[in-house]
Length: 155
Picture 1: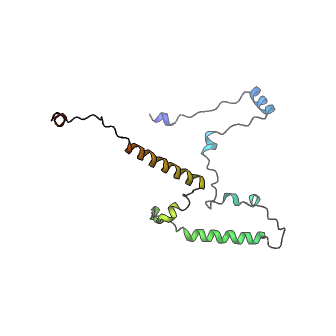
Picture 2: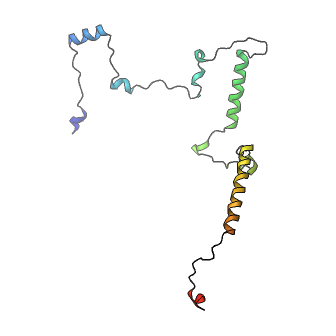
Picture 3: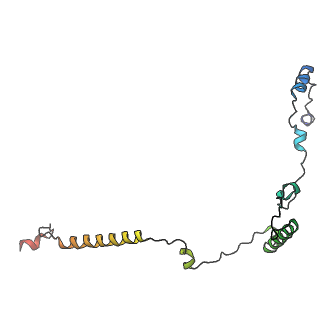
């Protein structure tokens, strides 16, 4: 079984006609197992991948009140510092849960209620129609309704 570990693949030499053809076409060899094993350089863990110098927004000052490039850098630094202060580092890999802030009932429905004159008018008409139907049903009574109390009728 120890001989299995010693088995390896030996790639044969490429035929001359294939080498010439690949050279004319400009074929590039794909990644091999060895190239895939090589660790690529890991990006910085800052999370600011778009802050590379050539990818930064261009600063154009048209008026006196516009921000200069230096002022923008100062503001970004302040924002980063504020963000770092807000989110304390997680110690020991533990996740900290916080209770959500409860809202009052006024805040829940403040943006959800909407009405218009048409809706109010339609609601009023529907209420009137319902009350008219109920009154008419109360007035109509049939005297020849079925009765299942036979003993009372025979007497």
